[in-house]
Image 1 (tube, rainbow over the protein chains, first blue to last red):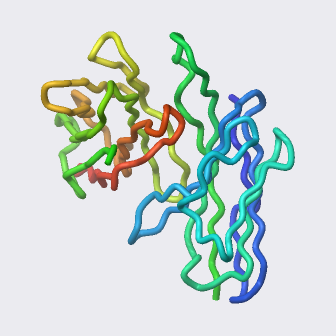
Image 2 (cartoon, rainbow over the protein chains, first blue to last red):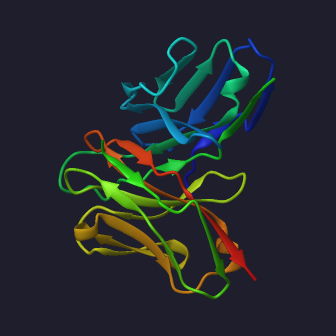
Length: 119
Length: 113
């Protein structure tokens, strides 16, 4: 089965350090999401891309978070500088979205997540 | 605002009993709705999705969901729950022109043996 690959699976870092999380979407998928999951806030949408263009990053703290898609096979989420409140599980998801009558391809596949701990 | 709501935070059922998890939506047009399941320490797995057509949707693992426009609901059901179904279940909907997937707060399912 095709899958979304996220690296690293776990990351422990000290406050103030830069953190980079990577995501390899399923080949051919044109939409990529970044979510953050915490006990308190649940699943929060941070940013999403369609055809590598950022469509919405309003969920991200702009001063420290950045999301990019250098190419169609890689999405990155960076935090600089990291803070203890950034500790969470970060999920990437990819899917194929298109306009038109046939929208049966909607339905996004999630990676296994990156568990980030900032101490 | 367009959203999905899961009114139950925790649900406990006995193994073999039937299950229904509630999801209500708030969308102006016909929404695209999904149910995902998350086991501890795992990512989210798609159970089923609804776009249009038949209001009763069949999914994996014996789950089904029924879209009811009159009640703005998309409840997930299973006739007989197995202990391995214990997990957290998320309802989700598409917004923002059909790209932005937003989630409910989740329902934690516990199965008693």
